[in-house]
Amino acid sequence: MSDDFIHVFEPGASDWTLLLLHGTGGDEHDLLGLGRQLAPGAALLSPRGKVLENGMPRYFRRLAVGQLDIPDLLARTDELAAFVAASAAAHDRDPRRVVALGLSNGANIAASLLLRHPGTLRGAGLLRPMLPYEPDPANGALDLRGTDVLIDAGERDPYSPREQSDRLGQILREAGAAVTEHVEPGAGHGLTQGDLAQVVRWLGGLLAPAAPAA
Image (tube, helix red, strand yellow):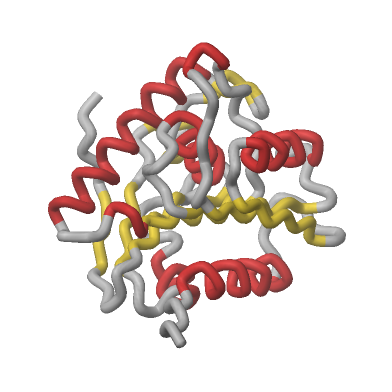
């Protein structure tokens, strides 16, 4: 697999880069408007998933709903990590200031980036994620200190069970990440205005300029 993706890059005035990861059936244009609204000063990097499921782009294969093809996910995660690093270098972006915003399938590969390539992301907004897999203890202790994560779940989401998102939050918190968890009342897998308001608060706090020293 090549580390090159069909993608859109939009420059930004700040040092931050927002990595936009669409859901199943989306493409590199789906989240651009939302990204610009949420982070007006950030650069936007939006790759299209390379896997097709019934003609719909995804970032990795699955065997059935809720059953992920883990070997493919691991390989695709490595590929995405290489793409993010190469893109930061190509566009002269600070690799320490990349924040992912992922929806559903995009949230799951963003979570896999956190678990498999800590340090690739400074933060990750995971919208309707599930736990992609348990970290392999053979790889050593996961260290996510200095990483901020939002886990945004729907109370009635049939595709991302609450126990999955709760377990993901537990793993990330135990690894040292600063985890914000939100459950949108009454919501399913689709996003609501309440979800977007939560993302605005979280992302605004993360991207806000540091206060000058007294």
